[in-house]
Image 1 (cartoon, rainbow, N blue to C red):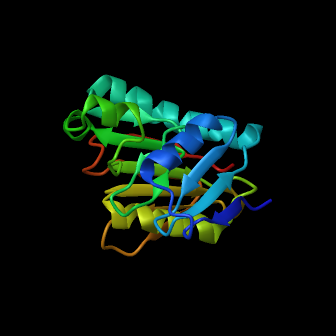
Image 2: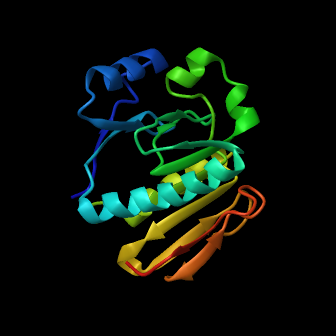
Image 3: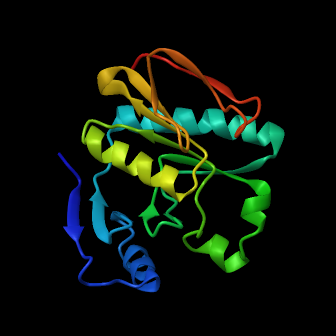
Length: 189
């Protein structure tokens, strides 16, 4: 099943209206593209939920040891500089950038592009839609992104102003200069 998309670009929801729509409908996972298209995300199944948690756990344990930033779950919506309101499956923001936000900005949808994101393709996700989302992240200032694709047994690495690189699974990935010392192996799913 493909996520429901509604073109509400003619409705012109303000940021506050979109925030209130999300808050008053907590059972719905909502995103908004930079073009104003509202996306209702379907929940993931057990396999995808477990994989998402494991990837977040690896990042969280590394971050707990280094204290270099903040790790976020897929429930967090980021107000991207390019205009979209997006929820990566896993996200990380460098600590000084996070502390540069006001307490109110931290409490709502943070108006910041994460430094690092992971998207995990579930059975209901369109690969093209996720690749477009990754491109939106890169255009918004994300410094490193991984698109894990169990269906094709591969992972795509995204970096700003560079061609994407695809590796077959299993593959060991590093955080490069964005997440110094972070390393994880993504096995075959």
